[in-house]
Image 1 (cartoon, rainbow, N blue to C red):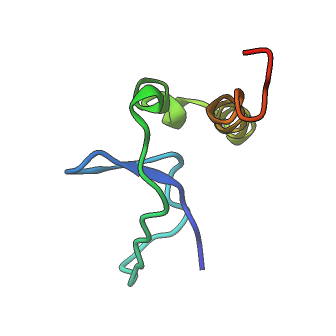
Image 2: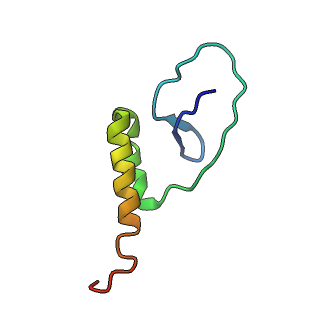
Length: 74
């Protein structure tokens, strides 16, 4: 079993990596969460980065999403 991250734009899937198998396979597509508007522009580059860079950017986006929660000085 292989798991490959992708972005669905409403019409097509953009894979973050190449598919490491050949031939026909049965697949299960799971939609995990919607892409937020501020993430759409940066996510178009995910296929050009290696896994470490993509994971780093995903972590930054996650941190920025909750940056102001609980902060009293803001």
